[in-house]
Image (cartoon, rainbow, N blue to C red):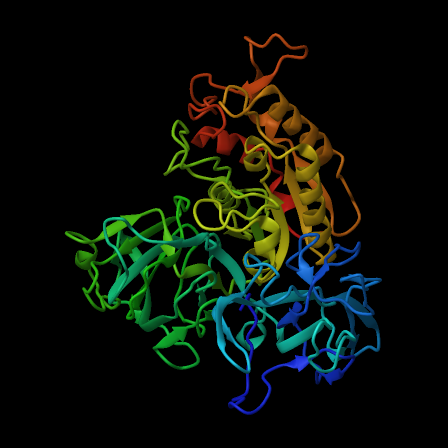
Length: 585
């Protein structure tokens, strides 16, 4: 879950399945990794959360979420004088690191922050049908250090009525970067889950094969798949998964090879769960595509999906009930009646490789797609995005800049700090940051190209600046370099009023004020300047900016005055100094 592997004992029906955090110290036996991930929940968590400065635990819990706390007194029906739960990590070098663990209430907390949502909970007398949540929170670890022990926050040691309690189901050290034989994993492709969807022409999924073509950004001789049922509400039974290099479309160059998971070809991914494949000895070159095929056995009404994927991605789905075609050396099963294909992925969210020189990964957080499903917008379904352009520039550069792994982490119409739930947009950046970004192996840099979606939705610059500020602090707190892009013009788009455009201008001022040369660095690329021209019809002083709509290659406006053309994406991507994508030196 969120890149961490949790091992739970067989509790049985007569023993507890969690530990209540009460200042216990747990020995960690010298393990190491990038993060310590807690799985748990709170009870009687009726304390409104307040984010603390210096709190780098991810995901960020929005202020006033119902959470647990310590040292509370109950006065006049409300909790008073509460303190945010804090624990401590002791490293092998005897240094200590405090951490906050603000865990929402299992029933009255946050559904969108939940790693798993159960449909009922049991009480001594009955079974209650209501959403019951389990949460995952990650704490960054000191790079290269070994863990000696973890001391849990000090709350109640037993469950008592009206007393806030913090229940820990499990904790695990996350290490997504270490590969066999002393090598490291590098992210070569990504497409995070947006939500659960169903094809209108197909209905529920059942006994069919999904084949996905994903283009690598960096080469490698060993591949690893990340399969995810995060946000899923049904378990996924996969009895056969294969990979092959792509010839064309859904056709592989040769008979696909079997993929195993802990040595087994079949696996069940529970609701909210994820898993990595065993290392796969297959060569994939930067710019070429890998075909991953999965056979879904059980019936699933709505399947986790990333729609509106970039042109480095194509998904093919065989007809319902058509069976296992994962080993097919042709694409026949993915054509004809009952099949579908397009720019989407299901279940597969990341592909990693062992690169020749253990290169770092770069996350492109944002895809520039605004209101894709709104009538009148003209976002290009097949238009190359920032991740595609930057990957192509790295592959063809003659400056000696290494070809870093480029991982697309954007979602169409995604907001920075506001969850949209079901439908287009998905969970906000701050909610999904740990799962979709911080868990990427070898992550050194995040390019943040988001905010315009919030602007045209009517969020003011104060809210957007606050969300961007929290994101900046989180990434720096995790030792990750940040590159912002300024927000491009929207003048002429129906939702882009003068007030909205002023919010955009004010947000750009905030972005350009963020330059920080301390490691890890924070910088920006002026995307606005790359694609904007004054609107000759504007009567303001200075004139409002609009997307350039001159003839190609200066045609940056897709037609709706907010979404970019291929040349618009390219102009912004060409503004990047490729060397800046790498880690600080």
